[in-house]
Length: 250
Image 1 (cartoon, helix red, strand yellow):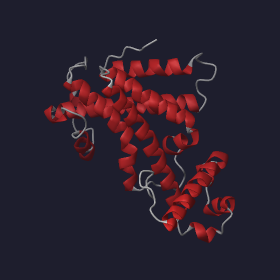
Image 2: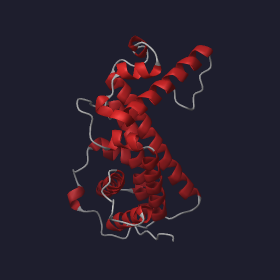
Image 3: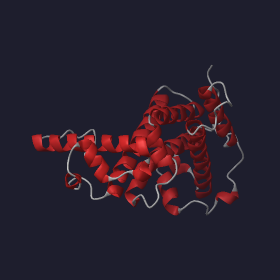
């Protein structure tokens, strides 16, 4: 499907793009009503007022439609986090403040797109296996977090002990190769430092996903009086755990 940045140039292409947008919107509505596990092309076709055979001109299967929704969700949240990071960097914010900006952007997207969040970060859809080409989309948010740590290391902002030897061999080589290209100054990292930063970035990412899930799935009901402030404190605590100081405003 074309990206939102590539405007269709012909009437036929515009008509196709419009139908594809309607298709995704109908699929999202079905997931919101019934859950991703119940999604069917026949039901989506009925909602669009077309024959189910018409849907197959755009997607080959229910799983292919799910993949489009998964990619869309990952790109939306990844773009939100990247934009927050870029804005914080342009404003000269510290690495800790950049992490908070990413976390807040992630939470804001999740709160506004609960069902998309549940699709990619919630319970897996039985029988559905995301194809390998979704990995790059899924990695965007983690890469933003990793960039913060790489910048923090280069700027001397990480306060904790040197890399833990237990990080060695823990991360897949492909992930380390991806991490080697993050941010400025990553070329100055040796293998042990890079592995340690990757593990720390995964800790931050996992904590971010878990904190948002706890809120969206009702685990904070009757627990905290201000969920946004509680979330910020979680961000600060997680950052402290990986040696990144955070001073929260307000």
